[in-house]
Length: 306
Image (cartoon, rainbow, N blue to C red; front, side, top):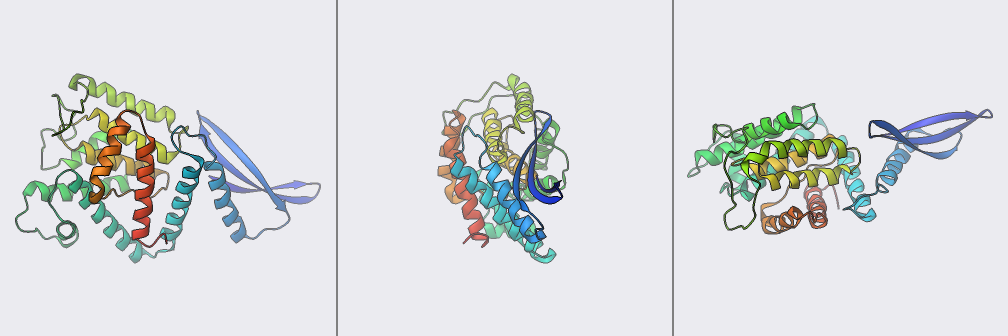
């Protein structure tokens, strides 16, 4: 957060910008002198945005370069500028389109045969496409319900949030397993990835949530969102719905800090799975670079970037 502060020194008005951040339970401040005298609100707003980008892009990160941090902040600023310029009807249309595409892609990555047109018919027209399974139809509806849950949720990330989100994902599909940790081993078809023993899952999720709580003020929000989703999916805590849940958690964490949601395209599924596998070995650079590029493509598709 950046605010404008005026200090009187020897009868002269001095203008400062102050950036505040909570770190390890304490408020950390960084200030910057602008100049003496009156400054218009329009100029102050412009300088505040520039100062915020300057400060955040200079945060030390283990996995993001200074150039990437600067790029992420510029993408965030472009997104929020565009969103704030939309009227209610335009914003609702943007969300409808974006969330329909997000639902289509996330389910398609997991094997759904629904097309984007099918998904639109189900979510926005209330129609059921021919020759599609009840499961696929419910997967589309549930993903949209999960998005609504995220948009209405006011709390922070915790274990209960994760379980509620997963329960929505498997609603009317696998009620026995919805919102419940797996009690058996799991494998991914045609993959040699090994996941933790089921008996360890509850504690591993608790450990991950604790890791989030102690690191959320230390890591860049974009970095935290991506890495948390990777750590989560590497546990594979559920029988089904792990990928969709992990991407929704990622977007929830981005939304909390006013960063744009990321829509990973079905057409880039192979590249996505490749960088996820590398990230499972704690090589996070490729997945972060991948997500930055996807975000740029997302914003370009909605004419937010040139």
